[in-house]
Length: 206
Image 1 (cartoon, helix red, strand yellow):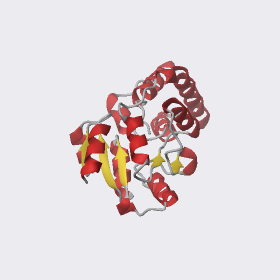
Image 2 (tube, rainbow, N blue to C red):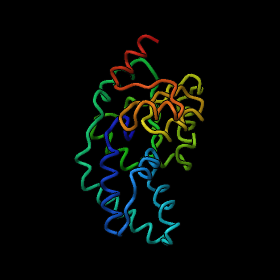
Image 3 (cartoon, helix red, strand yellow):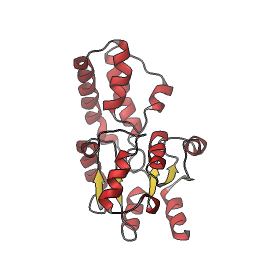
């Protein structure tokens, strides 16, 4: 969802930067990039525990980041072509949404984009426990759709997401909304696309 259907990565990053800054912490671009496609519940403890932070302190920063994000989420925009592609694809394929996002953020995205009924399966952070690059979120989605891995195309924008897609046994398609094509190929993408229009053309010719 994030970075594929909705251009949320910059908004999440800005919220994290502001929250970290309030607590006197600066995070490098390299570290931010390494956590794209992974939830805050994974990122924050992995960064803050080595700094000696307690669980309560981590929770306090997490709540602050969430509050900042919710205050600026009105800036979120759909990835160009995403909604039209979903409507087109839903008439031809079984669709699932598999995201590390919280249920609250996933529902907010559905409302913003006017989507939801098109998906035969929806898996968010409440439906799996192991974050990408673990394949669990995709395995749950495949099971709920009633399809085999080799029947599935997984559309991902992040390195961790593509690794998870490949580990789940799907055909991994990288979209260059977050990383460049070479990084996506290096992560294991079977194909790389630059837009949903290109994805639709690819499927029509498959």
